[in-house]
Length: 416
Ligand SMILES: [Zn+2]
Image (tube, rainbow, N blue to C red; front, side):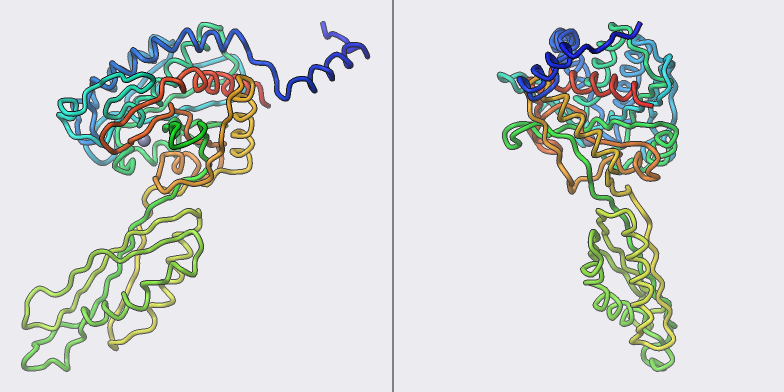
């Protein structure tokens, strides 16, 4: 039965609202997050002890076994999917079927940037509120948040979703070359994707954060076709591809400066095969960074236009751009979700920052590529030293992050 709001109730509620600037915490959930802190640390320890660099197929198989078993224990139906390129490891997918209407997805990655043997020089160790270990923040902390948030929600009996999918890939640190398309396609079948890369610890960051943008990558290739000829006997019959390439590189080197959100640097080149022949082929490669989704198309159009201006007649210059990880640019709906995250943090008297853009690329770019799902990044633990030595997580972030993840999932499940 619906309860009626009497004028007295309304006055009381108004009084309550003005006395506290934010909603009250869900005390049960908060207590459960506190309960789950020690088990989460244990899980972190177990995962850090499994070395799983992006090329370490054996270590990645162990990580897949570990996470798949944990997802099964939480009630998921699991499957493995081979990556389509790269070292040839498995993506682990766990699916939960609920009683609600929305389709929710969580993503994190199992690989680290470290080579086999790293634990010998960078062992797992605890120092106060810091726990050190290779990959502990990026991204084993993210996986731990997923596993333990789902444990908390399982214990409360929460099933207010149509499906809840967990996707853990083994090649994020090498550009998700064999899992990116899979993540894109799977994300498109969902309403919401929460990506679980780490947030920065304090210091240097003042507060935990959620992230709304990350740069994408692409590779530019310029090819010049000229005409070969004997350099001594008939140089005038040749069309020097190397000279033309040099001209094209010089006239396109600043091309990205007029296209906001793009960056292009020519970094490799090759031409000719022997000294005594006018080279007929020349090729250069460029590293491209993007923070806008239409950057590749705009750069391509600008380059195509520019290369029409030739120095060596009869040469043919073509440019191709091979997109890498797409940039992540959160939608307005993504921003709204992050703002709800701020309100959730406020319930437990913590401040949450919204970070607009990072130079490091993430799988949120793949999940967000079509714009179908609402995607927000950085639901993992707070840490520091990613891709460096002395990588650590801050144990003070465990409870707030579990609270944020569980509350966010509950709120997202409720939406129509
Ligand atoms: Zn990562």
